[in-house]
Image 1 (cartoon, rainbow, N blue to C red):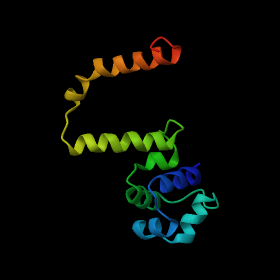
Image 2: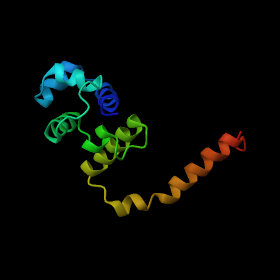
Image 3: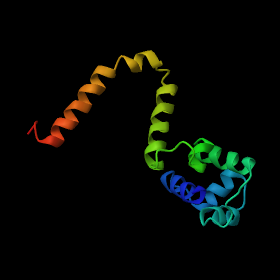
Length: 116
């Protein structure tokens, strides 16, 4: 599982094995072995270096808290990071809930053919 997640996140980030190895400070062959599940038990330190280089949390790599869709999880993490950078507070986001509920309703109605 780690290998699959690692490869998917690396590809989403648009990095080659060499680029990620350099950013993480580990060897390209070690990364390659991880992606091919030849090294299924990397140390916490190695996982930490890789996750920092990929700008994801370690749990995303090990698959502990992913929804099964790593790409979607990363997309949400990037979105949350953008909100933090903009200093948008949680309370302000919560104020958008009625709009989000409307969009969910509209999407559901559109799937049912009610909004054609």
